[in-house]
Image (cartoon, rainbow, N blue to C red; front, side, top):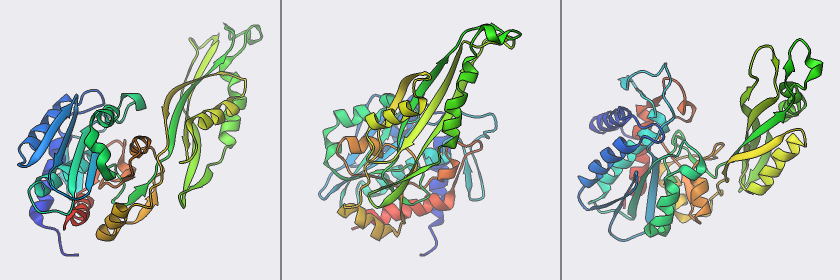
Length: 358
């Protein structure tokens, strides 16, 4: 492959950093939505629309419709996060890999292919609130209220995937598990029941659970369950009468939400109360799709399963064929001092550029 155009590299680097400089923590996406809308409106021959904070665009013309999806929000900042800047190949900034580098790629592809001859129609969706609960995401209303999105032959989520095409995605549920006890003075614990210690047997069973490998669509996914939050007690000298744990269960494509909830209840048994707080289904593994084959052939990308949750699941629920394919570094997602690799961003742009070429 020939060396990338230095001008393209600079444009992608600068655009990624400009987007990183716009704070867009979940629920605070108004500024970045306005910025993206203004950039899209400046591109000739592009039809732009808004649905709340979600910005959408499409080209005219003939051929199959391919839609690119990118979320505009980030997780909350961390104390170690630097101001957005470039250091050699690394583009530092909150959301650089997850997924403002992907947004930059989407914007430059829209700019190039809005008016040039191409073999397909291009759609773009920049949506809010992906990092929050399933039911708050802006993609749900966008899919429900935008008929042309359902004409897509292939939908591509530019989630960070190191420029690997990743099929399917694991489902994710969160459950609050509450152990009940009876308060007492810690000098006389026999007069109460310790709710924290009551969680011991379940936590032991949880710790003994090994990842379970499940094959779906010819790929291996790993089902895992973890305790991720804990809260209990009101004082150092008080036996706690309540103790809460958050359990996060990641389950393979093919397992329904009802079945996933049953797995959690079986682990907890009758030792605590269970309340499910977020239920996100798994994503269907798509392999038999002519546009996916063309994407793989033209880009040279590898194919792998997605061992995480993405909106491929929401696309699947809407009856759409979706895959993950983005230039961000998956290992950098949600990290302190997050960065993207400029070489990967350029590579990702060129891979999709070849795919759209006649």
